[in-house]
Structure formats: C-alpha cells, structure tokens
Length: 424
Image: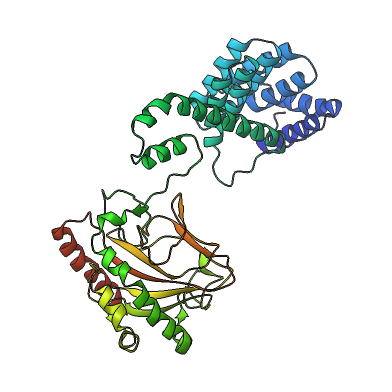
C-alpha cells in the first residue's frame, strides 16, 4: 500500500537522522519501507542516495540521484547532492556542471557556491574559490540559521575571502603607487572609499530619511567647511557662544531637558535607554521653528552668531538650534534624520578626550570651535567615553545642492505635510 506524504516524510526524517549520526544500519529499515511504498518519490530516492554514499557505494548513490533528478529536475538540492557524489567519484568537470545547474535553478542557493568554492580550492584555483565563497556569503540573508555541519565551512570561506581581498589590496597599492605619487596632495578619499567598499572593508551607507527623501542628491557624509564661507565667522564666535553656554550650565542646568522624550505608547527601538533620560539633554533656542524666548534672552551673542548661518525657515518646522549635552559614558545609538533637504551643523563647545562622532563609514573627533557639517539622513552615532560632559551646538541649514526654487517649493510642501497630519 502506498504511504501518505506525512508517513513518507517521517520515514525519510528517521533515516536522515540515523545517517547524520552514523547509524547506517538503523537508516536502512525506514528507507526500505519508504522505497517499497513510493519507489518513484524523488525525496525518497535522494535519501537513499545519501545513505548509499555514506555507506561507501558512490555508484549506487549516483544511480539514485539520477532518478531523483529525472523525476524532479527543478530541485537544486538534488543537483548539489549529485555533486557531492561526483566529488567522491573524482569527476570534477561533472561536479562543476551539477553545481552550475543548481545555481541556474536558484542563484541564491549558497550551499552550491560553498561546494563550488571547495572544488576550486582542491584544484588550486584560489581566486575562483574566493569568488564562489564570496557569492555564497553574499547569498546568506541576515538571521539565517546555519546548520552545524556548515558553520566551519562558512568560517573557512570568510577567511579565504578576506585573504583574497587583502591580496587584491596589496596588488592595487603596488599598481597605483606611481599614479598616487603623480597626484600627491590631491584629494583621493573617494577613491580610497571606493576601493575599501569593493574589498569588503567598508559598508555602503545610503540616505535613509525618516520623512522626506529628496531624490538625486548625493549621499555625502561630511561636507567640506571651505564650501560654506559664512562658517568661519560663526566659528570665530566660539568663545562668545561657549561663555554663554557656561553661564547656562552654571545657573540653569535644569533647563536642559531629555532630548529623546517619547510617550509610553511609542515603540522605542534603539531609543529605549535614552528615552526621557538626561544622559542626552538639550536646551533649545529654536525648536520646530519656534523661538524659545527665555533661552534666547540669555544668549544674545549666540543668536548674533547664528544669524550668519542660512538656517532653514519653515513655519512650525524650522529652524531648530540647540545646545546638546551628552553625559559621561553615554552613547547615542546609530540613527538617521528626517530629510536630506537640509544639513546638520555641529559647533563643538565643551569637548573631552575619548569623544567621537561617526557618519556612515567616516569617524571624526570633535575639535573646539571647528564645525562639522553633515547629512544626518546617513546613519550616524556619537559617544562620550570620558568622565566629563560633552556639549555641542547643533543647528540645521539648507542642503546647498538644492536650487532656490527647490527650497521654496520644499518649504511650502514640508509645512503643508505638517499641517495635514496635525489637523483633525
């Protein structure tokens, strides 16, 4: 009597478990039962082939797999199983063909590329092996559970891919040495970033605004200060701004409120530790376009300096300008801002050793009075590993790559979006 699908799966599972544990004799009975009940079932035939291979009969294993593939030609797993048999039979050309057939059925079937890499290794083709291993690693989705027998294979693959890219970088350094000397002193950071990304040492960071994404603006982590003529005058006012800040810190520290302040009904994700915490606090001069008059009155020199900057002006949305205080041993987790139509400016005012700031793949250390101008829709994070607070002034300016017409249109659009969602 033919067995139902559930019974067949149970018999195959029992046989495969026994084979995996090396109990070949215990695997034969459920497999014989399955073969008698369903001699033309491709999964039963594949399991029989696996037992035959593990028992030392590669020829019989091949016969079983040939039958399974004939019955179900679109199953890439059967092709990889056949490739394993062909490895034992020492037929490398046929093995490679079977693996390529598996990948033509499923280009993301990483097990096939792992075996392909191992085959190339056996043949002494290190670069081809690294290419296959890299394809395998790139096909493994985050969170994928790797079977225990493959974990050591994955680690070996990672090591060989790293070694191959290291060899590539050494090759590039040698080949590019002369042309680098010709352009000594020229800005080559983008070239270096390009090659670091290709070599797998650096991630590609994209703009990921939480609100509006303005298309066709380049994802530039840090903008050059020299491109903003007004910044020198503002930086020259650092001592004045810092003096007013120190007065605020001495007399009005309670006016620095938690920067992250979500209600209990909001999913916090990365903000859980800092929500409603003074470990990261702010004193606002402008907040969502509104002047905070009590604070402004105490900071006339700071306000005069800010007047030099092209602050974003959007009703009920911008400008925003504030002093940002980060407590010792505190890290602001990776996050992104709301819109790439604007840039964010940091003016460092109270800076300690062991403080840092990362935008995308580039990390910078704050220097007193030296502005950092960056696109905050690219993932960024900050940390204070010192024993003293760190304070910077933060404000937003228009992205200079927008035209005047685009600024005007986005001013109205951004205000209209806010009006729409705020009205009942």
